[in-house]
Length: 282
Image 1 (cartoon, rainbow, N blue to C red):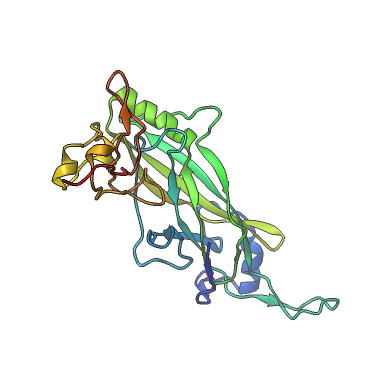
Image 2 (tube, rainbow, N blue to C red):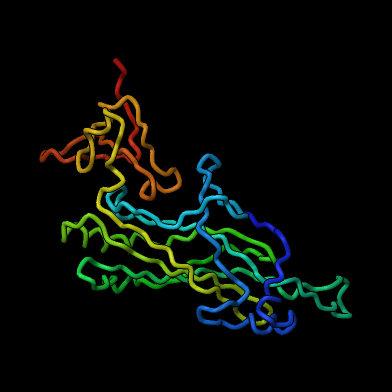
């Protein structure tokens, strides 16, 4: 992950709290209120740069996600959020201890610790989907140990739907013959400030979890005949204009998959997503 010191932000003044006092208040968890730590947005990755998450705000952001639970094997299906976290505190330095050789110490540095994720899956019947006992819908994801300086930003990679969460979603959609359901993730950034903990207000990110929706809607005439649930043979393809998201094929971008074989019942086997064409052009 990369980080940026960015501009020094004095938003604490807008809260009407002196900087020194805000230091002590920010070390507490304030439910849904300003704490000096905030998730700004879900970064939009430049997939041409090895899926590196920029440490400063991207001009465009993703406000809603799509996860197709049929793209990958259930052991690999998940959704990744790329949060940009900002330290809203202004710089506040204190005198160094007389026994040290250093200068002043920055009191408002935040050491990132983790992201707390809480999932809510609303079914078409208006009820909430229950999660498996061994895989709850509320969990922590460790963050890279990044020092977030006052006014600075740092990015992260958070699997907000894990494969074990995706499994019951897949089963529900299959059992109900449903096209999709909405899952909302409530994400909080957590860290250490001074001698205490600090937590951001919730960042809510909705996702359309679907059954085959990223494998349809092809405009290419060759691919159009293979809309889900149809799967072409890799040997029948010479090109693939729909390679999906290179950082996670199951999310956000249309993808074309192909099969390397079929079983005795005619079901596709050895499915590759994205498709790797092995056919020969005429």
